[in-house]
Length: 127
Image 1 (cartoon, rainbow, N blue to C red):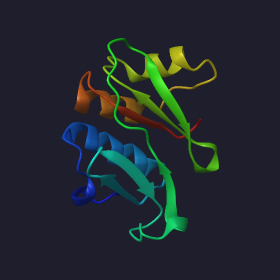
Image 2 (tube, rainbow, N blue to C red):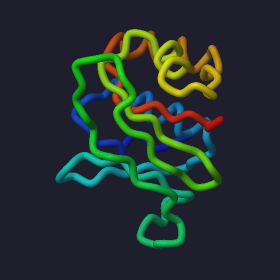
Image 3 (cartoon, rainbow, N blue to C red):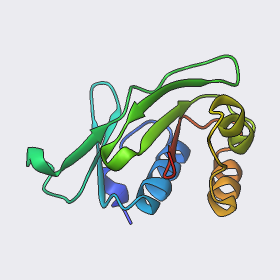
Image 4 (cartoon, rainbow, N blue to C red):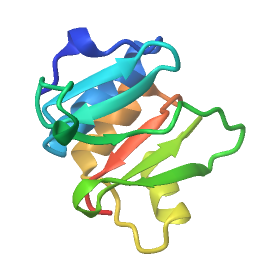
């Protein structure tokens, strides 16, 4: 799993979801740009090596409606779904992306129970 000491966003619950789901995707390290709180996933702790960098996420966005704000391509065809104020991750994923399957029930249950209705990042391994 990822090292918690390298997660620095203001919302610890969001940090936890990022760490758990990124870990499920095989990322071994996540660090944050301190100025704008952007998490970046790496293959290893050698994050100064540009070749190890997988993909930066978008900045944490605020939305009033239950919508997918942005999708960003990741290495190996994966995408980051950036959502905000989501009461049901599974419903949003299915409704917003026609060909999307739901996240594994364990991740859905874990993420929703940990963050209630305040999830900013959902890493979807199937997309």
